Length: 205
Image 1 (spheres, one colour):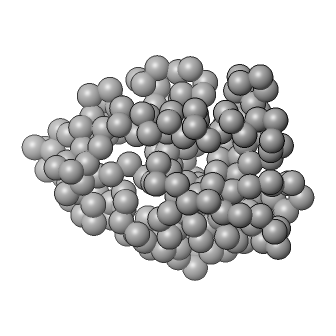
Image 2 (cartoon, rainbow, N blue to C red):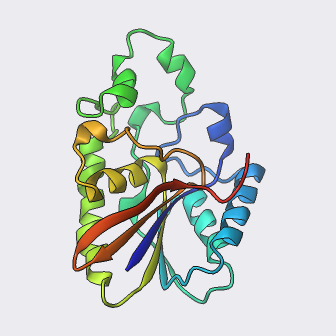
């Protein structure tokens, strides 16, 4: 079974440096074009089913990439981006400019000890819900589906990459996966996952 993990296209908040997390932002015009080019690049892949974060930017990307395929898109809350709690909606540069915000610095360079703002999540929290998705959704699909698309967010897909490759939490950010509409691909056979590629894009900047 082949599984493709797709990040959503660009949003206006991406370009403005605002922290999105679980805020329900939508794709920008550039993000829509990225999704359309990605759909063109993936048009021949025989997806059987699509799972998506319910957040609009991911679901809209999933709809565009689905194209004319007569297959369902199933929303799953476990695929939402990491919650940044009280930091959501704030400008990242303003937070980083304040030396008191060591918590946000840990987001970039110390995933083991990062803790979200009030109401937010840690990377351990994200890993827990993503592994639940692996065990309850992906593994039971083997033998029933041959090609699956999962559309989500950068930290969600980094969690899949880290855990399915059996990397330690320290390696959460040590991945090439970053760009909007980037794709990671895994193959699942007999309950074992192997990564075919970590980060691919179907458009040029």
